[in-house]
Structures are given as C-alpha cells and as structure tokens.
Image (cartoon, rainbow, N blue to C red; front, top):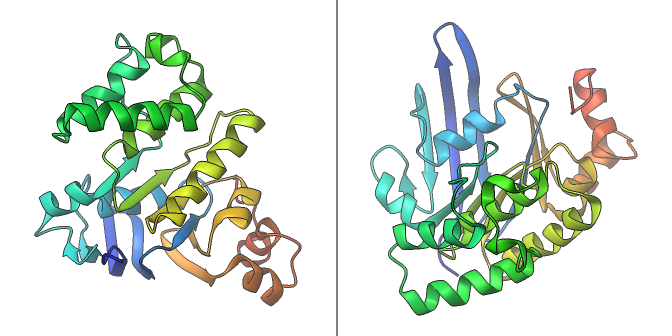
Length: 246
C-alpha cells in the first residue's frame, strides 16, 4: 500500500486574537477512515483547510502522504481529493459538465474521465440528474455532485467535510456505502460529520476536538466504553457539557 497517512504535530492557527486551532496533534494511518468530530466552531474545517493547503498554519506541521503541506503543496494536491463544507461548482454547467471540468483540471485522459464520471454518478444516484444545470439542484444533490467532483481523480487521500449534510436518509445511506468502498480500496479518508451515527458506523477511529484542542481519540467503541455512554453524542456531552451539533 502506498504511504498515504497523515501526521499533524503541534498545529496552531490564529486569526488575529482568535485561536482557532490550539496545539493540535494526531496521526491518521494509511488506509484508515478517520472521523474528526466536534461542534460548530471547534476548528474542524480550519484544520482540514490547513491540511489541504487552503490555509497556512501559524505554527506546527502537517505531513500529508509523506509531504509537508507548506513545502510540497503541489505534491499534496496531486494525491488528495476535497469535498468542502461549502460546495464550489459552476451553477450554469450541468452536473456532468462540472465533474468533467474538474477532471480536466487534473489532466485526466478523456476515456478515463468518462469512465470515472459514469461510475461515480451511478454510485451516488445522479445519472439522470447529471444533465440538469447544477444551479437547479437541491441541497442533497449539490452534496452528491460535490463528492463526485472531489473524487474524480481517484485520490489516495480524501477529505470529506460534512459530505452528507442536507441529504435525505436514502441518499445518506448510499453515500455511506460509497465511503466504505473508498476504504476498501485502501484510500485514507478524513471525515467530519455532525451525524453521530455516521461516525459510529463508518470510522475506524475518531478524534473529538473542542475550541481547537483534541480532547479524545480512540475507536468509537472504546470511547463509548471508557465514558460508559450509549453513543458518541453522550461521550461528547460528558466531556464538554454540550451537544455535538451546538
């Protein structure tokens, strides 16, 4: 298996006087499906933006697939796929055209791009919707086409920031199976989610952060056992005194 793990060490990010990420350290093993959990404003998206090169950290290091994010951003861009919390797409293009545009940015051969596009659209249930303008999509459809765009280049490492938000139950379950398929292929997956059952079902391990600090790290089952909790939501409440969706 290729080296596609992640190592974050003493990561700090300040926005003026605001400390968004506070001395954060954790590792993600190659081929692991790792959940990064916490309430809104905990620092999850900021951490992902640093790991994917969209933000520069104030201090600390992030090693992605063996490369330092500050000194080798191009190498990292070639091996990752990112499904951001705020979708980025062209509303006047169809879903398929948006996917093909991103595939062309990656320099994918035409035949391979068509093959990957067809396969991914089928997996997320957007074969028929792919011919519609993306600006007319529902929230759930936008999330699904964003997922396809993020994974069109068959990345070794996938960052999925709230990939199932606004999806109906059926689409969410289909997306779960899609994410499991990524792991079965040996991909490393970083997942943020507010759906606690999603993390319990999918993740090998989870890291819980609050106020930019890592406060718990283990398998979902081990954390529930340690805190004598019925689910991760209860674990989080016991640690922080508030719900994960706050």
